[in-house]
Image 1: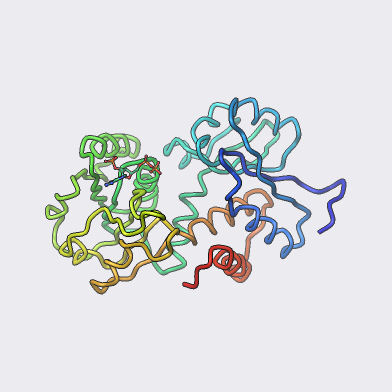
Image 2: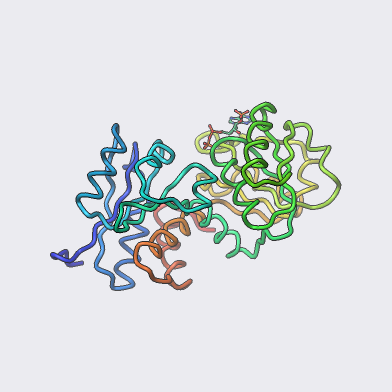
Amino acid sequence: MVIDGKTKTCGLIGNPVEHTMSPLIHNTLAEKMGINLVYVPFLVTEEVETAIKGASLLHLHGLNVTVPHKSAVIPALAEIDPLAEKIGAVNTLVSTEGGFKGYNTDMTGLYRAMASYGISLEGEEVILLGAGGAARAVAFLCGFYGVKKVYLCNRSVEKGKLVAKEVNVGLEKELVIPLGLEEYTKIPDGKYLCIQATSVGLAPKDTEVVISDPAFYEKVHTGFDLIYRPANTRFMQLVKAHGGKAYHGLKMLLYQGVEAFELWNQVKVSEKYALEVYEKMKGAMGIEE
Ligand code: ATR
């Protein structure tokens, strides 16, 4: 690629940033779509609000935000998208005349990843595992996209109750029902979409799973694990062993990037290009499926 006086700069701020796959996503899309844009990682260890101000003064075109800054950047924004505001975390900043506008494409990316597998949320009842930042965001996403009920199972029931209350108050409906991990037996009989949003099963502890009881998996028609390292988590294996379909979270990572790229450049990325990027991501990860 040729970098010249008109090249737009986008990047990622976080700590750490050296293992990110985002440069691969955005630089590949820029090249494929003939957009004069470069994407680089920026390590930000402190004073994230000052960093955002600096980015604005440098007229950076757009930013992604990762751990640990996804909530800390919010006070530095000029504007925030309603879903991101409810969640209280942003991962994408788009430059506007008044400063940056924040979005949460982690969640819209998850929605799009699920849609690409034919999974819909509208009218569904969902089992959600976890009550951390990721699970909380998924609960809001469910509320935004017409899920009827979310059974939230978490090790710490108190934390689950807190998240349920926050989401139900935020969405002004009784969406989330908090349960302990063994209390899944209280979930009415039926087959559910189950979203695995805990950190359990993440490499290198990839033999771990949050619920191992086979009876639980009888309730699951589709399992979506937000984890993508490994690409076939214990959770996914158990879902499949009981006849369900199971997916890992790498497409969520793909589409959070695609959605950010679209917001920055006011373009629509074709599915063909998205899948070509996905092939590169799988290659970089050594994943086949
Ligand atoms: P994130 O922000 O990425 O969601 P987090 O806030 O640390 O991460 O949340 C981690 C989630 O994984 C929580 O739901 C946590 O359960 P607790 O709320 O009971 O801590 C869950 N988790 C982590 N280790 C676990 C384990 N060994 N067994 C069951 N759940 C676990």
